[in-house]
Amino acid sequence: MRPSRRALFGGALAALGAGILSRRARAAEERYLVVYFVKGGWDPAFVFDPHFGSAVVAGDANAELATVAGIPFADSPARPSVRRFFETWGAQTAVINGLYVGSISHDAGTRLLLTGDRGVAGTDICTRIAAGAGASLALPHAVVGGPSFPGDDGALVSFFDDTSLAAARGTQPALRDDAREARLQAWLRTEGDALPAGDPQAEAWRASLERLPSLQAFAATAPTDVGLESGRVELIASLLGQGLSRTAILTGTIPPLAQWDSHIRNAELQSICFENLFGRLDELCGVLDRTVGTDGGPLLARTRILVVSEMGRQPSLNAQGGKDHWATTSAMLIGAEVAGGRMYGGTDDGLVARGLDRVGGGAEDGAPVFDPGALAATLAAGFDLDSEEVAPGAEPLAAIWG
Image (cartoon, rainbow, N blue to C red; front, top):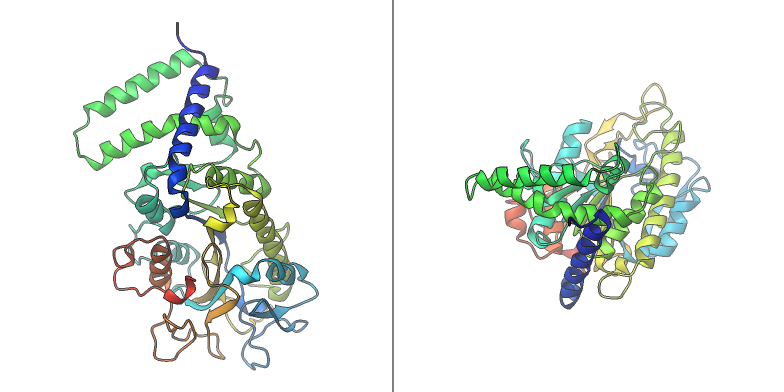
């Protein structure tokens, strides 16, 4: 007699549990990466890199310079979440100013920042880390509403939204026909077995089929509403907390009637978006801190969070009171083993990236600028991967790993 769907899911969950238990011995070596992507191009002058007193940089006239937990920032009564975030998490937060993207295109900037590669076939750093430090996990890289450039490692990537989770549960578009699904999977495996051994596409096919039961098992117990950011955060915490994924990415929610791409009303839009962003980052860090990891400790103690936008905004206002695209931006790195409570790098009075001393972490004219390749190399080094292999010729920021 064919086992029921419940029994199949139960068996898969039991197998996952056994896998998790077998990995507990390696928990001290496990680290996780979450990329929180800010889509649209933020204005670093409004928080990270204000340049008060500059005749060129138009920042927030209602803000003043403050320092919390060692991090200087533009403090405004309109953005209380910024101060609150740094008061709570600043000691484990590093701000990087003067990150030179080298593009003012949304699409190109996104690809550059996430891959560190100027070619069109580059693989994003989340997938590279998942391949190098988590390929044996059930669902190595989780895309939970964010950009993905998987390159040749697409078999390691799982996409999560309400529709895909419902399909994995067998509740959408209609209740699963177990007999029909068994026939389909048998056909897929037969086709996969017929493909030549060693062929990359064939191996990716087989790897994806092997991960399907894990995805279905996870979907059976996953948060049911990932249309909201709070649900997406809970889903990521569940994946990492169970040791199913090594990396994850999500795109931050933008408040109604607001946008980061502030070609008009820069001051108003950036202020609204930054207030929303830091409130959501506080929630993300709180959820990860309350979630128990495979080692029995808080998940945040083993997780790094990269917060980045694909570009910055020009230093001066345009005729509409907005700011156009700018190739220099900022980033934040939060969490496990990050040498936080300080700012790294910097820009000159025209918001042009200065060089960054990779050992000391300070801005240094004459040193190489910090670019997407260096960011990828830095993250790779933080996961004990070969940074030269991930980003050839790029020098990682050694100072940021405490």
